[in-house]
Image 1 (tube, rainbow, N blue to C red):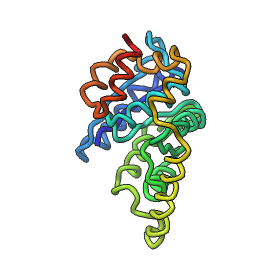
Image 2 (image 1 turned 180 degrees about the horizontal axis):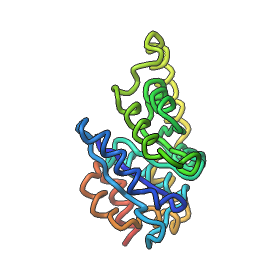
Image 3 (image 1 turned 30 degrees about the horizontal axis):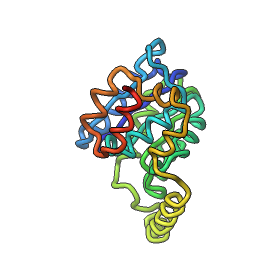
Amino acid sequence: MKIALIMENSQAAKNAIVEAALKKVVEPLGHEVVNYGMYAADDKAQLTYVQNGILAAILLGSGAADFVVTGCGTGEGAMLALNSFPGVICGHVANALDAYTFAQINDGNAISIPYALGFGWGGELNLQYIFEKLFSEPFGGGYPKERVVPEQANKKILDKVRAAAFKPLTEILAAIDQDLVKGAVAGEHFDEYFYADCKNQEIADFVKSLKA
């Protein structure tokens, strides 16, 4: 699994802490972490939580990432932004129980963490515990386990509802303020990482034309 890490401007200073905790857990499991930034609060390319949603949608929709770890101060804004796009199911995850139940019941592909709430002494341990429970088992296994059949059925229903509710991603991106979209893909290493991993030529072509 290729896991993209995206940080917005208010919490960018925590990037190295989040990346270290994530890699510590997932790399031994055979997953790869791709850090799209922000890397520091003074990065030239600044991301808002709304742009986190745009970037996450591009990465997941193109197949450049299989899962996105993001967040903001409360975690709510980034979660709402990500869930505004097709192909993205993002949960608000503040602790290990949230992580485990979201993965097993909702079978999503992104989480939003409230990095400014209760992030004091031991904050990096909470992150580690979140990632341990999130990736401890294959997603969609059900919780409690005897509920797996109806929970998987509900997830399929949700996927169908969302498919009917959204336009194609490139149409959505074209309808958004183009400076906002350009800013979402302006990160220092975006081109290096994205084009190497992108599996959707239509989205790749859109991004190239946007940045031309």
